[in-house]
Length: 479
View 1 (cartoon, rainbow, N blue to C red):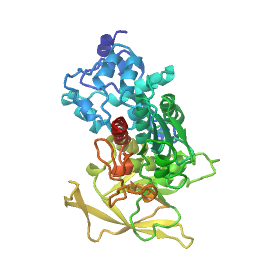
View 2 (view 1 turned 30 degrees about the vertical axis):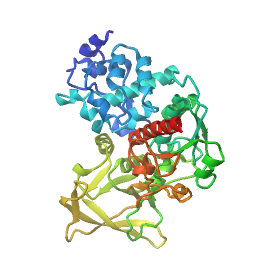
View 3 (view 1 turned 135 degrees about the horizontal axis):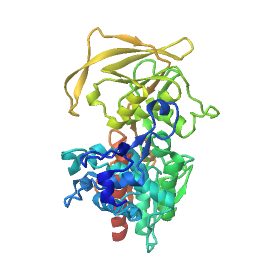
View 4 (view 1 turned 60 degrees about the vertical axis):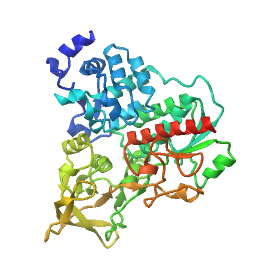
């Protein structure tokens, strides 16, 4: 069927109804009641006909704000027009010029506040489903065995990349395309960083998506060494002075969890979201035969309202628990993606908003037995622009829970900065690096992603990895 016919008729889409071009082509999902009991992917993605229909909604702006809204500056109208033409391979190569992880980004990027948030089509009607189209193209290319195009010439210089998360993979992929020899050093036994330990399988499948995107990066010539803890196994100075690397990129993320500092939070049954998700995702604790079990059933409280909190809550739900999101502000201030909040509610997670814990109650054996809380109300805006929550007088109560998951953010582990002479850090233990090119205070050392700005999104880390790749190329070209 021709693209124009598909756009107007949308045969087989939405029950065969003719769709208005102002309305997104809907994406199929697992039924909420079924998906709440399994770890299979929630969103099922577009089929070819659906993707073409959605792509024809793009008006191919000359001044494309969507490109400006993308942290890695994908030529969005360019790849979408190739979908309209039915040339999916060309669409993939256009995306790959800018993104090393399109199948990942198509699933977990907050498009609603980035590319889709500034889509001109969205002024009157729904914005184009850019993320779902990116996912479709990347998944199609993977099934066809198509890989990104590599460098035509080698530059004869080596770069070390610390961390195999989104920042490190992006930086490594871009440098390899430029012709550099790149080696990634990963502290864990599996490659992927937060993509494998932090994001649940039902949002981001590991074998079908993450592993294959990593293989695409490796196909560019990138080498990866696991179980290398930079700062212990080897230092940055040793990489530069003894191991033959001309530059180093630090993309080690922010894996040090934060806690509230309230009584009882060292009790058995209190997890950081980082630990909980790592056990579930990397150690496969959802499998009853896993050597790293976590609690099944019972009542779980997740403290926080970001994407990680939603991931932890939805994981606990799938482990058979009754799950409560406890957040001190209102729903309007929830920092999680709208889609994640919507999915959590559909699946049966309970939101206890304008609520704040003050103490974890512990039984005689040292296990969580409940949580003292207070009700909150919103006062004047704070420095972030959000209304500051204040305690409602006389509102104390006890919530009976069997486990508590703290999802209050993370900060960088100071191991690398403390073992690297001349590397400036700020009061939050983040490495100081310029945003434009990722340069740090130490010559030849660049940094980006969560190690620099603290816990943020996958796509922002990727944008920082791209910036640092440009910075490294400029540095080595002029050296």
